[in-house]
Image (cartoon, rainbow, N blue to C red; front, side, top):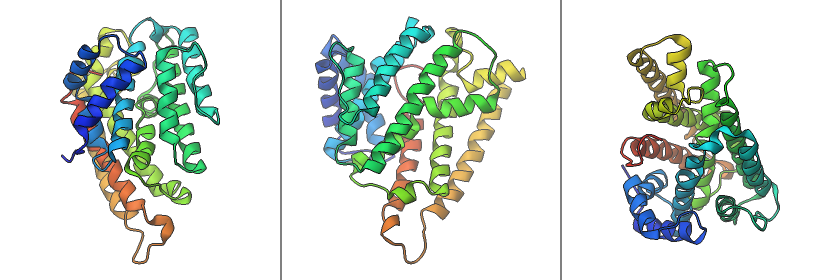
Length: 306
């Protein structure tokens, strides 16, 4: 598995960045947690060709995701649509601002998010920024939908659950980030080609399925049955754990096979590729890095089941 040579630098940068933004109180404990959770390794495996500054940004984003943003929704906020809506609404507003900065008095998680988004869009085209903003808003809206789901209501069917999980694993955001941190940009026309769009969707589905396998017990213990595909299969289809795992294993195999077939076709635009497709092959390879890196991390992190 390839990884970035800038991993150690990025890990130290993220520990300092999280402390400066007030995301953690004890810098030593946080540095230890980053190592135990292998946050730097996650960034390094997903973006092995990132610049040093780019990997700093990627590692900061991963640190922000898992502590404190994701953990916020494991507590009371995860079942409070009013409070969650207020917080997520503040972040959505930042994405829409010409100058993405947080307002005065906003909590550390929002101020840190504003810094991440501001650095993410720096030097990127307006087309890329619009694409990234749309995917961020999808992610944030998906988080709000999960909060609402935890209050009860009908269980989603497996297809609907997977569709939601594609949004809330943030894989589309991470796919956008690959261009920024590795120092290139896919042509706007090429970015919307059906083949590349389908590859990104498959990548997101693989990450979502793998995440739900490793996080099922933790989410079941919290009573969070609506937002995990494995638990939805058990609940709505009456499957045993073994049968549900077998079903998901088959879904993963089918998606890996589709990814490989589509990857070969999409990454080869023909014998005389023009300028619009010059970064296509690089981007397709980056999607593979993100899928492989995330799945390795899911099964090796000391964070527990996310």
